[in-house]
Amino acid sequence: MAESFDPRFDARFQPGYQQEPETRAPDSSAPVGAVPEPNPFERTLWVIAAVLVIGGVAAAFWANGLNYSQSAIDGGWTWPRIIQNSGWALSGPMVTIGLATGVGLLFRRAITWSPPE
Image (cartoon, rainbow, N blue to C red):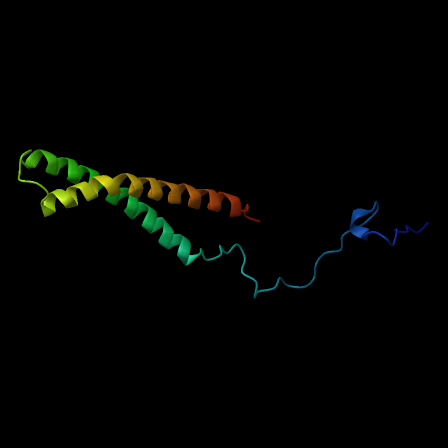
């Protein structure tokens, strides 16, 4: 009695299917296990995130250290005092934007990740 397969469905998924050994060689043009090249803009954003966090922390330490090295009564607004206040004002947003960029890139990497085949 010959087995018949339902023509509406693939024979591989029906009872009684016998897989025939594959005789052709695998395609050598397709890369096997190759990891796709990451986006160069993503690398740039990782570097920018690190620079913002490190630069923001460095600016905060520098501005705080400058506060103790200058006299409290130094004659008004001088250029070092203006730069110091700019360091204080910009250090918080720099760290925040750097950390947000890093976390965003981490989530993007997690969303686009696929398990190796």
